[in-house]
Image (cartoon, rainbow, N blue to C red; front, side, top):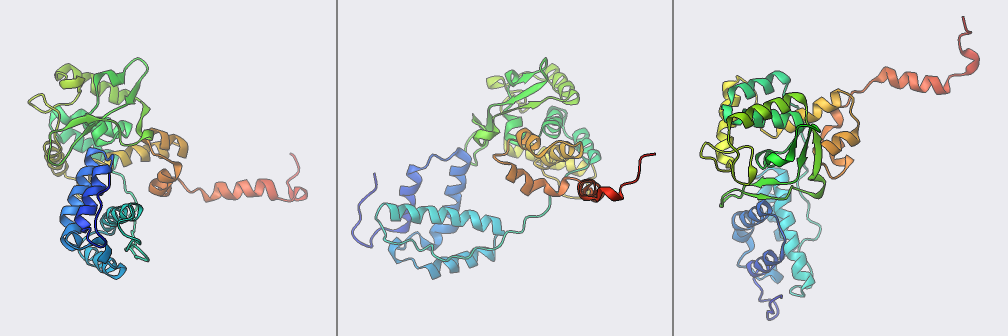
Length: 315
């Protein structure tokens, strides 16, 4: 229930608290919203009556944040600010949102450069044995980090050679890891299980006991693997493997996509394997990896438009 305020007296922080209380955010999104408000929005606008905030001040705030943060990050901050103001308008707390005519920094999306097979094998060989199969699983199925770390034994079907993605390990910033649903509805999926990944999983299951909730991958204490624990092992492995450029665990997902594309899979197949919500998302990320065969294009057009009278007579 929205609180009632005398005209012009609702502070922005009160409007933000009201907005937060109504959201059905996943834990990680709620953490992001809380950190965004605490560090980037409330220090500027928290103690201001929300009705007093002008578009020019919002634009100045965007400009200030752009000088300090990446454009994509500024876009996230602004989306939260905009949502709070829109809710205040809907509740009749303010007549108009100050988010009018705001220009955001342009986001230049760098082209994905997947790791090479040699880099992936080097990292897998260099990482601690307990975590080696996580690397093989991500590189061979495209599962996200939370999907790998939340994998249960029941999700692996060795006979059908598939892995079912039905949960993930959620890693809040200030709370213990816990299991939750996948990132989006399209993230629920069945992914083919290559032989090399199946072999690695069988070997892992033979060496390490299952954790709580049938977790396949656990810490040395048998508990769910925390972000900082695995992150440290990953960075050490990248360094030990002699990789000369920064490689994130998420890049194994790009590696998997590049393999599918390189072996002729269609956009729709790549979309389904990765759990993307749309083919547009897949193309926006990987279009440059699909081969561009100019000669094939020329042959296709010539075959249909060439004057039949110019065709070579049969031998």
